[in-house]
Amino acid sequence: MVKRILVQDHVDPTILSDKLVFPTSKRIVRNRFLKSALTELCAPWNPSNPDINGLPHDVHVNMYEKWSAGGAGVVVTGNIMVDQNHLESPGNTMIAKELDSPIRREIFSKIASKAKKHGALIIGQLGNAGRQTQRVVNPHPYSSSDVPLKIKNVGIRGFGTPKALTSEQVQTEIIDEFVFAAKFLFDVGFDGVQLHGAHGYMIAQFLSRTTNKRTDKYGGSSKNRARIIVDIYNAIRKEIPVETGFVVGIKLNSVEFQEEGLTNNEAVEIAQKIDNIGLDFIELPGGTYEDFKFKHRRETTVKREAFFLEFADKIKPAIKNAIVYVTGGFRTVPAMVQAIKENATDGIGLGRPITQDFDLPYQIINGLTQSAAEWPFADDYNSALFACTLQMCQAGLTEYSPEKGVNYGIMDLTDKRTLMEYQQVQNEIVHLIAKKAEEGKFLLSIIPYQLNQKQFICEGTIPEI
Image (cartoon, rainbow, N blue to C red):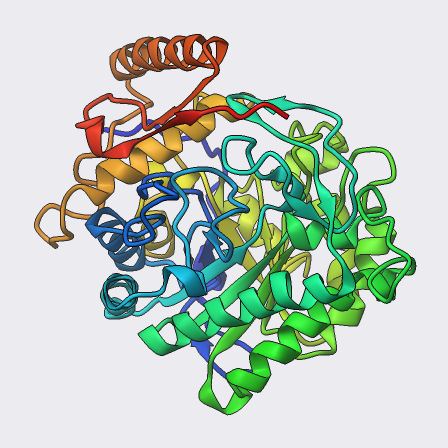
């Protein structure tokens, strides 16, 4: 039995079951819950073999069907990379012109059809990591400008020195690749796409003064820095008109905490500008690789749970058209309901809580629970990443069946013995990863706890810079 966060005063969850209507595509969303993007890290990585590089498999099919069956109104995939040389990490799924094949289209089509049959909208998140590309993938990735990360490592990640895109390359290496991937997903049956403009990835690198030192039409003012979003959106709509009902949304930082980072006021300005172009929804998280600790929280925000509500409070009134989702920290129904009633958000984004309980939206809407499961890694990003990816893969190992339910096979980290055993295995893998790194080698593995991990290992040699 999963142990849950204690809620003293229960509230009526009915408002969370309200339908939402996306303003441009006119698509109806069955409730206010959005399963936010979570990196799966379980696709094969082999740059010399385009037939399998970043190719999803049945694990992806099963996990996304289960999230849809679990009751979320919108299910967003993990970061689908639009350039195989600019990955968040080996293990990402990929869509790119040079990787296109009938097999790739068939498996993405299977993901879409399985997820859609349970009533959720299936949205593919599209991204390019830019300067946050791991060195093992590309020691000299492109970015908006040649500004390297101040940190060289996050956990097992190492980063190289970026090169600035030319004006022509912004079109060919960024805009055209996002458009190709969006059209690919439209063709195979996805309901829409989400542009990843947060967490310091490529689009966010254009938005932030920290990383954008350009002097052309994509640099300088907040209007110019947001131009990349406008150009990508318009190019997608040229290929996939509004009349198709295809959804286009964005994940946009509500704030960045590092020096010269995107301020909350700038985020408001950018949100206003892009709200007018026709985006269906804007999801608001916050932070970058250079500050993933999210310490800047007022006491009132802590009580309201969502990490970024204090920043979203300023952005939400500026958005007149798009549906707004806030992601990061929601754990109890009272806090979710309060955020909706205060008009701090239109919808509730769920990330980590929805890997322990794939059906958390269903449980909440039907009055079966008032909270998420207790989470042992609230302040430990790396451990949370390891645990969430393992739980996702565990869920994906078996097909959905109503008899077994959507949470079949997922380890219960609220059980003390399970947690202790898991942490021991995790520590062994982390030690092995560190040892490999000392040898100049790269290893990424789903933690092999209650899982046959052989199909989920990426290895390589770390290049010199």
